[in-house]
Image (cartoon, rainbow over all chains, first blue to last red; front, side, top):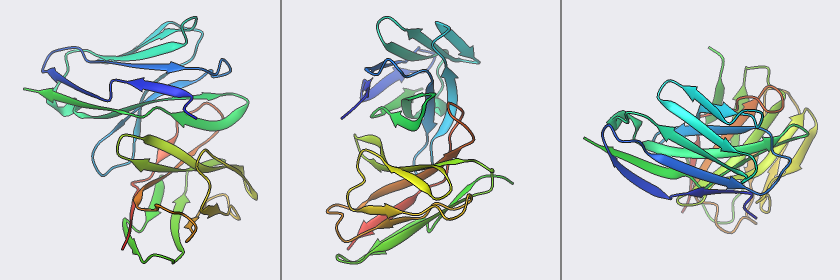
Length: 112
Length: 112
């Protein structure tokens, strides 16, 4: 079963553009939504995370938008750079459960 | 430096053999996880452990086994019952519920 659905599977954006990656979840008990960045051959690393009491969170060029009623959240990368080319994963978990569920990933390529 | 260490980085196994992947953390984290990564399928949870001497099955536990005898260590055994074991395996840990998960660098297992 897939509790977190992520799209698109791959994305190509020109440098300076704003790639947007979307995730949708089913479990209303989820209350922690992180995004991870992974470079080839490496383990994922936390990029930014949000809790459902806010609708938006910014950290540098990265922004999470959260829509609780629609059960959706998205990652926006402002002023994208070739160094942002990586695979991005959304994830979700609930406070009462240690299980951390990931989406299927988005392979992002930023072209110069 | 604190972190998660997975070993070995590359592992080759003959069909029918069991193999154990090592995961050690010195972050004093309570929860530890094992994920399997295949192209296009994201990170799928194999097993997770919230405390020593306790662990739960994830979404794809069949053909795998784990132990958690020490807080620092969470080894994964890929048994001969796992039908398609060739994959990239990632270990992670986190301090408490709904906090950042830290990942190791992964072990690439190939069955020959």
